[in-house]
Image 1 (cartoon, rainbow, N blue to C red):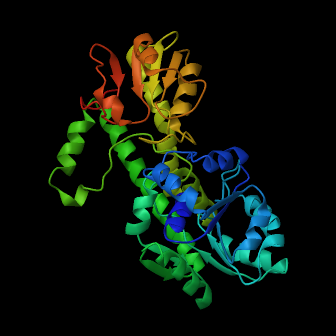
Image 2 (cartoon, rainbow, N blue to C red; image 1 turned 90 degrees about the vertical axis):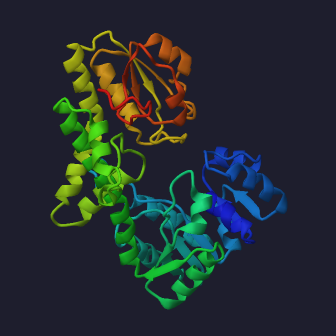
Image 3 (cartoon, rainbow, N blue to C red; image 1 turned 45 degrees about the vertical axis):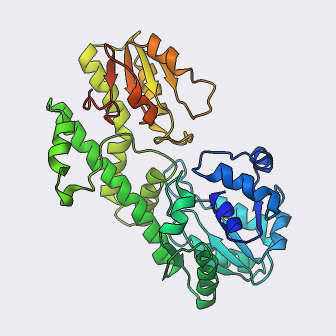
Amino acid sequence: MPLSLALAKAGFSVGIFDTDADAVYRIRRGEMPFMEAGADALLEELLPTGRLVLSTQPDIVTRTGVLVVVIGTPVDEFLGPSMRVFERAVDQIAPHLVDGSLLVLRSTVYPGTTAFVGQALLDRGVKVDVAFCPERIAQGHALEEFKTLPQIVGVDADAAGDRAEALFGRLGSKTIRVTTREAELAKLFTNTWRYMKFAIANQFFMIANQAGVDYTNVLRAIREDYPRAADLPGPGFAAGPCLFKDAMQLSAFTSDHFPIGQAAMQINEGLPAYVVSALERRYGTLRRARIGILGMAFKAESDDPRASLSYKLRKLLEWAGANVLATDPYVQDRSLVPLERVVAASDILILGAPHRQYSRLDLKGQDVVDIWNVTGNGIRL
């Protein structure tokens, strides 16, 4: 959706095809289906121009020579890549693709997916130029970062590269041309590197916490005025729909199953269990304890709960016998309750997502677990 808005702002006529009828209806009404800085105003500006056309039917594809596909490769129940989503997409769009079109894949994919899609279309009698041009933006900051971040263009033919560079050049993006396999690995490596950095931060936190040391002071001593450690992140839940999945795709791709990526997954996914165990050590038992979770989105200032570890934390606390209430100012979920109720009814509060508004809460006299140090009182657990 942000890419559609950016392309329309650049002067293109953009057709949006989505199988989610409710999302299409909301966009037609001028309502963004998720939070994105600057998108609401841009959508309101562009709808009257007629440069945005929305449909839930795939035949809209016949009206263009450039198709951008924004679906990723999920992992299956065995943490291996599932190509079924692309097989279905090819079956759906092949009858409507104009021969000679440019097909751009955007979401992170398993290595070889771009070539697979191009061959699958050719097997169905459709010849297209295929490019893998991965999204590199941070969710919530897309409209700004389209202009400031270079765009990787992965192609195996010059014609496809020239067309893809011309497309993204209209957004003002610098382009970096490589092969499709190189681009696929570059995107997977980027996401996995971030995931591993979060894992080492969380491992360091757990080591310090188990030793009874305030990790806030340790982290300050490491990073303050020391450039070589400036990229060490703080601890917190490393979740969402991308990083875990992409580390597991690399694990499936390499013959040694990527042990360092597997270790990162175990650390990051294990942090909620560590929190529960630490609370059990402190209190002896959590049975009938009244616990509130502040923040259920997978990251700060987001309304996206996909793969959020706050939900895993809630489940583990409930299994431990606690009475759990949860809240979030942005996530739409009927199981959540207002912030005031959670604060008033809880003996223990756990910061699940570091939304800025939580830093302004007066939580004096309450037991607060704040791994993120949102409250500024040090990391307490």
